[in-house]
Structure formats: structure tokens, C-alpha cells
Length: 396
Image (cartoon, rainbow, N blue to C red; front, top):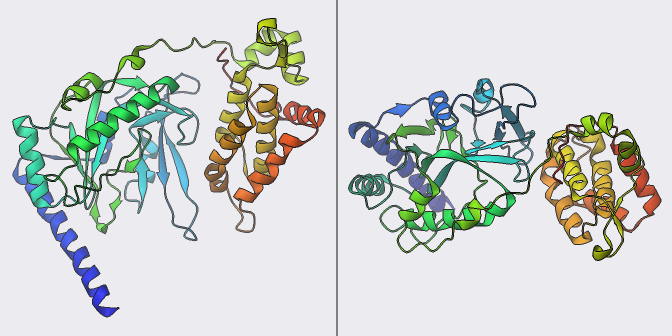
């Protein structure tokens, strides 16, 4: 046991030495270190984030991760002022995705715009860093805008010329492109472990610049500027030999969204509001669709947003029951409702304020019994949920 501990400590010491060597190499090559505020200001240019409520722009969502039993994981909303950025600078484990979000949670349902494609290459020693810098210089690999030293590895940030709207129909294409890019950059010249690439999705958060790396408080995450370059997704694809990812779906026109909020609809269409929202009376499908009664799926999506943005610790169980109610009213399959309900588990548990009142998988399972319950009671649940403050926009 003692022998294993000594060997483990030696590996930790070697990585700390490599961190210092990589730091010296970046300065020797003339790549300036950039402060956390300057880095995130360049990633999210002034005016690209929310400046006042309901201005249609998203925010950064920073997450502070805490191990089980070591405190509650928290999420911070950072608007265009970047004032709340200091909540995670210097933190032990702070994550920030290169994405703006609506609402208050880092979920793919809330994702708004992608500002950079980021590739995490792990197990990067001094020689591997030299190899990467050489390949960036001779054009073998696409030169990133920033290289972030994250401890044992590096995060390669490719800032985009224009942020990419994260519509649902784009998720699969963006994930395929990023995987191809990761496999291109993570290889036997850039990593000590070339056969273990970490295939991260487009919604992945990365250690905040200025926060602590895995190596500890004396080894912070640092950003180094490599170029002024900003890229398009076509540029990234072109840098990957024989890349067959079809980018065509990225240019398909998304469904048109209504600009009428639910509060405005209440004033403009009082009879509709009373029947459809308060009483929960569904609209009728066409005969071609079978002549059954069903609400627009937008109502279901609206409630999902309410769960992430407004539900408190005392309303978690009810929120899942209401999800069942809206799902059935909107003709959503029970399979999808169950999948969506369990997807909220981590978020709802993060709201725990009392250690004797955690929200578990068993609670979700119990709330989902509403799917088999009395439909009249479910309609009452949906009507009750309207009492929550609303800021809904229809997707019909």
C-alpha cells in the first residue's frame, strides 16, 4: 500500500512539474497570459449577453461542483456585466460552457447560442505541447484562438465569427462535427494517452479560467492567446481531412416562433385563456389527425422551462406531477414524459436546502404514478400550476 501511495504521489509531482514547464514554454514562445475577465469578455463580446430582463438574450451559467457531502452544487447566472464571474474565479471546481443560456440552469433545453467550439485534450506534457504549437504554426492543425492550460491537459478554444443558434435540429450535426474535431486533435503527438480521447458534447462545461485545476490551488487554469482568429463551422470541417459530416441541417429554417407571451394572450384573448389555460380545455385536432382533443406541445415545453427556472425545494414533487398532466394533455408519449422527468432529477436535487429533505430517483418514480391516475385530478393540477409567474412564448 505504501509503495502504491509513493508511486501515486510521484505521478502527481511530475504533473505539477509539467504544469510549470508548460507555463514557461508558453511565455518563452511569446504567448501572453490573459486575465479571466478579458478572456470571457472576448469570448462573449459586450452586448451579446442579457443586459436587462426580457431583452431576448441569454446569459452565462457557471456551475460550482461540490463532491457528495461537501456542500451543495450551485449555479450562477452571469449577465453582460460579467460581475458574477468572480463567484467561480478561484473556485475549486468551477465550470463554464462556451454557450449562453435562457433561464437559470445549464441544460440543453435552455441552451441559446454557441460562441466557440472547444476541444479538451488531456494528458499533455511539455513535449506534447511543443508538438501542438508546431502543428498550429505549420498548418497541420487549425490554430485555436486561445489555448487554456487546465492542469494535466489543455482546452483549445476556437471562437466563432458569429454565435450559432442551438436549435434542436442542429444538435446531432454539431455533436458529429465536434467528435471528428476531437479525434483530429487528440492523437499520439498531442497526448500521452492517444487511445483515450474524451468525446465531450457541445453542451460540455470547461474549468473556468482563473479557477483551480485538478492539481490544486497553486496551479490555476490559465488562458494564453494564440491568435486573433475567429472561425466558421465550415472552417473547422475543412481542417479535418476527409470529414464527411453534412452541415446542411444547420441551414434549415427553424419553425417560426410566436412573439405573443402568455400574459399578453390573457389580455388579447380572454375567452381562449379561460378555456385553454385556466380550465385546461384542449384544442381539437383535425379529422385527418384522428379527431382527438390535445393541447399544443408548446404548453408542455413551457412547463419544462418553469421547472428549470422557478420551481423551489417545496414544489419539486408537484412539478413532476404537473409535468405528467401537461404531457398527457399535449399528447406526449408516456415514455418521453418519464425520460424528461428523470432528466430533471439532478437539477431538482441541487435545490435541496435541508439535508433531511433530498429529492431522489424514488421521488420521481412516485410522482410519475400520476400518469396512471385520475385524469380529472391531473387537470386540476395543471390549473393550479398556472398560478406560477409566467414569461411564456408559444412555439406554435
